[in-house]
Image (cartoon, rainbow, N blue to C red; front, side):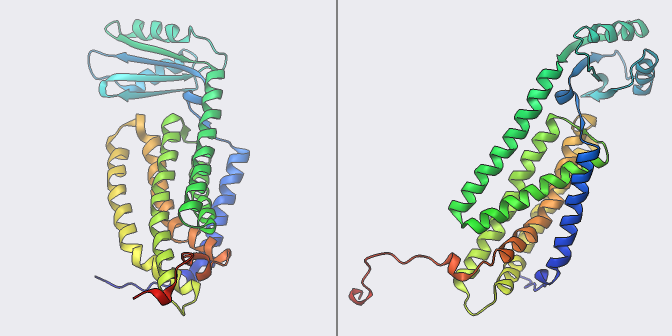
Length: 305
């Protein structure tokens, strides 16, 4: 086993400035550009059709454009003969799907309709609000759990790391105008769970070393703890990324946003479990007394054999 001694905490000021810069950029982008909300949140119509043979998606996009549509998405769904069309409809017309199907069928009579779904703007707004509320509830429950399981300083560090990860992902989706739909929201919740797992592993080792090692400065103990868990953290992240990269390249357009959010989340979560939590603990002046195991009351050591 290789004993690493990388001085992570020597670079904590650089890491702090990097995190603050990324969060500032994310906040500015979200404030001025906002998120490119998908059909699930903005409202609109979804049409799934099946062709008798593989179809050129570019031709369908041209057909949509020629019929006056400009805010839409055309992707394969399952196979290259199944096509999913998403059309934003801010006016809330439930007849839009029938209109699109009519001119698509006129272009290719062999095409078969599989389904038409309409999401009204009000429903999309409710989904957005409930999704955001669910994320806040998840962060609150995590705060309570980590505070109970470890100590409140660890809880503040964990929640800060999770908010850091989610904020950067949202900022990148805003900056590059990637579609933000329910699959991306699900990915954000998955990132929270993944990042928390890494944070718990590092925090547990920090707690053990604070209790077991005496005569060392907090920065030295934290640095040693990160090095001891580094191989586990990197191997877990690497194997997870292999799966996510396969999803990204071979999973199709339907889950492209999901895999993008998770890839960013794994990378940022690995970084935050090392630097954000440790920086918070040092910033909150954690000491060995904070993690001391309370002695049981009423124990008479003189009476022990």
